[in-house]
Amino acid sequence: LIHFEDAAGRDPNFAPAYVGMGEAMLKLALFYFVSADEALPKAKAALAKALQLDEGSAEAMTQSAFVKARFEFDWRSAEALIRRATELNPSYAEAHRALFGILMARGRTEEASRESAITLDLDPLSAYAQASRAWHLYFLRRYDEALRQARIAVEFEPGNTFAHSVKGQVSIEKSLFEESFRALEKAAELAGESTEYLAILAYAKIRSGRNAEGLRILEELKKRSNRSYVSKYYLAAAQ
Image (cartoon, helix red, strand yellow):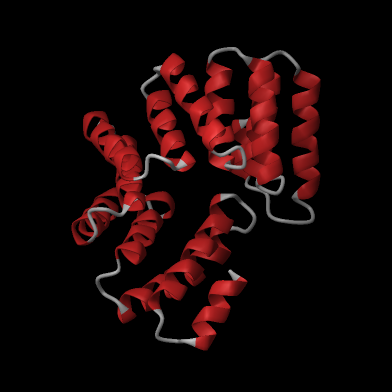
């Protein structure tokens, strides 16, 4: 975020700097390092500035669609934005990945499957694209395939947080709890002890029967909430 702000300060007309600022703020909210109330106004302002400078920016449209979908639950507007982004830049894998997520959330799995395949074709060496495919299979309850794909994603890039997270969550459904613990612990470590991943780890511990360990993690997160932002959603979901 600091570097994008510096870039915008050096060249106030450089649209990608504002896209970066917007995306960085959204990531801080997505991983629950700050509240959405704090992050969203800043992210939306930065993305609006990017589109003002470059109305054809597929990157800015993609992040704006993410705002609509994830934080405002305006799926229709989100889909319209992201489809426009794919029209403007058909080779932009991130836009197809975002469209996949929107379609999955709307229950349109067949269309989502096509977007997942397009994403992988456009970016075959990306661990994030591999993990996104695993995430798609996870939601289809095709857990064996999902786990194989998640393991491939981790092999592609051992430092990819999302890949470890998907692997951990799929492993829960396969009752491979030790593998799940390792993957979620790694995801939490890579994400700076993210509330989201620690809460999922607590859920995995509780589901495996190691209630005391899971409850201990939740208690630590509750204590953390006295010092910094902790999403109540994940505290509730883990129990």
